[in-house]
Length: 266
Image (cartoon, rainbow, N blue to C red; front, top):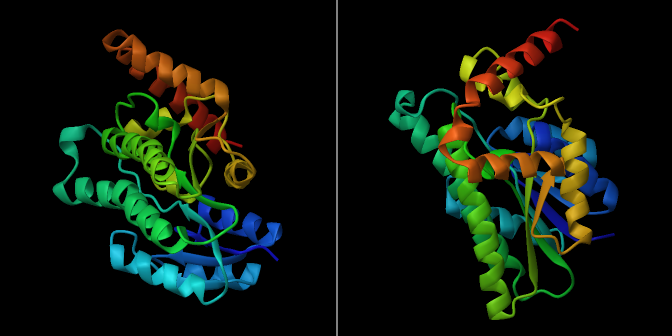
């Protein structure tokens, strides 16, 4: 039996699939989610435990670390919980801006700090996995707040790993940057024109595919993994191309809308 793993946002989507894979790998999983019932359902399915966790609250992360320690040695912490809002930046309400930044970026920071505090003096192989996004690698018109937060996750992940290396603390940190996937989070914005850019790739990933790559990071020292890798090069290329590349956004949205309509008609 491996050690304990904590997964945030485990009630659905990526988090649910990651929790299931970690359990099959032999970890005891503490499934956490702001939706207490959803977390409990996942824990029952995989033979783990559950806890309500609002990732905006640093003390709730520390409480999750304490709860995890009751079941054994904490070895893995996956910061997965996220939200997304679509539309031009100036149309986001103050509450939506705050929610996106607090969940998608501060939630990762609070979770990582709680994990470091809980794991720093332990032995063995210990990992923090932060779920970022392809949106962390370049500009994404229509998803500005989401992209900003995910850029922050990527910057924080690398910087945290540097701090840990400087301090001699044996914790490996990873960022996973998946392309858009067929999850409840994406479906919630299916009707919004600005969100069509999520569908601009040749296909949507599945939650299981993303979970497979997330858990595979535990057997590597890789700092950043992009899924699929070639889409990462495209995103980085758009970032380097600057203003001219941004003019392609309407084309990407049109292509995404065609893919979305075709998917709905199946």
